[in-house]
Length: 281
Image (tube, rainbow, N blue to C red; front, side, top):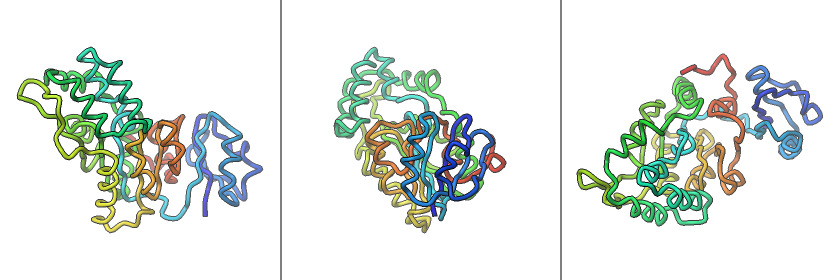
């Protein structure tokens, strides 16, 4: 069985009445609801009715996931950390252009990461702390997403093609159980321009999802992966529920669900959590 899950300011079941096979279930008054529909064809019809709401078709079986694997940059946090480090070096336009192409799937991730890091050779380690303190912020809803899923027994993982310096701090701030990221190499004072091997990219993110599901003895239907860039595609397509969050077109087109208008608490509404069940954090 499937339901249309509709999220956004002013969300009104009446707008989709012609598609419904029953009464709507309100998850958040004036903001989120589920609507029973006859078949999957209702999704395209529903999306054609609105351009300001996030509308997704969701399977009701095993809807509340027991494993969350999330990307970090521009998903759990507001920035691309590498681009902000580049800004400290006066190289943001050049490096951000490479980042954008890699996220769109136009460049191979590992090569693009090595190229960008090579451009930052000699950057002082103090730039890492400055970037984290001044630029990195959790995206709205991150803490409530983690707190609610953890309260309901889910295991949570932050898996990033970014760097351990940031993943460690972001995981702690948001409330993830574990984190994985790449290693920046330095000489004690400055970045060497190199990345520790192996590089954590698209395959490593997929591996993290599969290893965790196996270890926790979970069916893949019980897993959720969320991200915004091309290196998230493999884990998004493998998870029981793969979500493109304010993502690049190549990701949004391939994901099972997509959000373009809402914050991270939408991932809870997508799983059928109502307002009264969401842990405020």
